[in-house]
Each structure stands twice: as C-alpha cells, then as structure tokens.
Image (tube, rainbow, N blue to C red; front, top):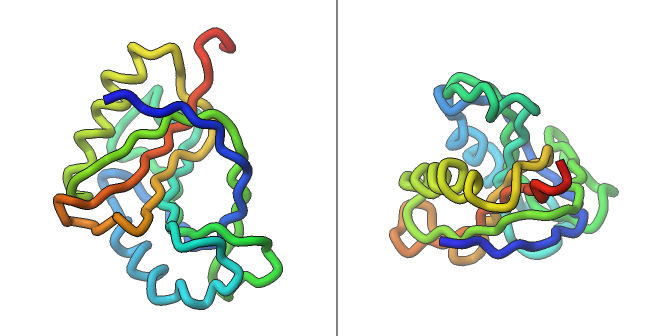
Length: 162
C-alpha cells in the first residue's frame, strides 16, 4: 500500500484535546465529549472531522506504549472569531504529508500504523517531520463498520533534507 504524497495548506481547527498514551487510551472519552458539542461550532468549513495527535520529538525514538501525547477531536473553521467555551483553537501548519487510505473498522487501525511506521517509512525516501499526525474522518467514516474509510496523514520530509 503506497500513500499519496500531498502538500497540506494551513488549517484553522477548533476542538477539544486530552493527554493520553496508547496504554491509557482516552480516545473514546475525547470523542464522547466532543461530538455532542459539535453543533456549537458555527463557523466550520465542511463536516470532515480531524482526529489529531501531537507527539514530542522523542516519542518515536524512545517508543513505549506508556509515552504520552496530546490528542484532539476537531473540525476546520473559517476563523477563530467564535470558539465555544471549553474548546480551543489550533493552527495546523501546512507541509508535506504521506496520505494513506484506510478501509476497515477503527479497532483494526493499529495494523495500518504498524505497516506505516514499521515497513513503509523505513524503506521510503522520507523521515517523520515534527508536525501533528492526523486522520480525516469524512462522510464514509463509520467507526467499527468494515466498510468504513478514513484518510491517515503522516507528516514527512525528504531524507535528503536531514
């Protein structure tokens, strides 16, 4: 499975974030708190949801399932003029990304991530860039449905740039 290499343009996001680890995965809690409040965000652009992870620079070098990262449930907005109470803004910088299409239930998603980080990335002409990783959950995303579809965006830079 080869990704499409795309250049992301900067995006304004509004949402909710939580600290978590793979060992203490609070993703369900995050989305459970965000989805009922989605209608409060009135200046959104489209209906695609962003499931975003922000890792520190050493996260992958010293990988452990106990390493903490920040996870966001968010949506793109036109501007930050109106941010509902208890939500935050985030500017997702543009840049180069490897975009993988994942089809299948969310609970089996770890298999594609093992492929991306364990097989594709080490044999590609790229290394990870220090930017957020995210998934776009569009109209075809259906959580545990085997026909569910989402885009996985992995920040990359050329090995030649190192």
